[in-house]
Amino acid sequence: MLDSAQAEHPPAEEGEAAGGTLLSLLIPSLPERKERLDPLLETLALQTAGKPVELIVMTDNRRRSTGAKRNSLLQQAQGRYVAFIDDDDRVSERYVDALLDAMAGRPEADCIVFEVMVHEGGKPPRTCLYGVEYEHGMDESRYYRKPNHLMVYRRELALRHPFRDIGYGEDDEWAARASRDIVDQARIDEVLYHYDWVVKPLSWYDRR
View 1 (cartoon, rainbow, N blue to C red):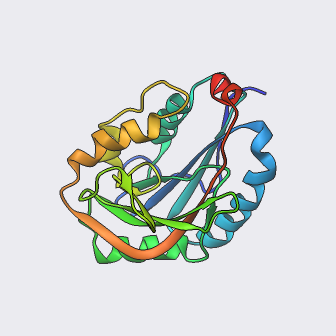
View 2: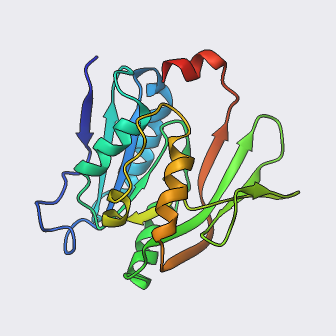
């Protein structure tokens, strides 16, 4: 399989982002993840129908690193804001509506953060809070992180910080750089994303 990118909702023409596409949802994927990706795309298709949102999926056969794919997706995005979704995760029923409401209420925001529920095997789920005010850490009930690729960034801010051309760890490294440029942060006090944390074998990292 060759590298491929598909826009589920056609991107706005050049120069239309401000009045047309508000949000670009970007998903890098792999052929073997199709079983997890398809339900996610069905959910997002329902949530984005008729709304100023484009969905761009890039699938390849590991010819490029995850960081390189993220950069390519950012270059294709036409929305005023961008957010990544990992192909093996899930979004809440209100994911798109909540993000659009936040954009309408805080159109000047550099970044919109929300809560993520982390599911780790048989352990009780734990929320992760994102914000420029947090350092990387955890306590008895929560994780804390700088705003990363899952959060909503203004596209021009995100483009200032290319992802490193590496297979893993590119998201945290990017977040450390990009979050320094956030001046106006909006917050949604709601779980909008579900992250399934699965411990992977070392061979998996070698192939990314």
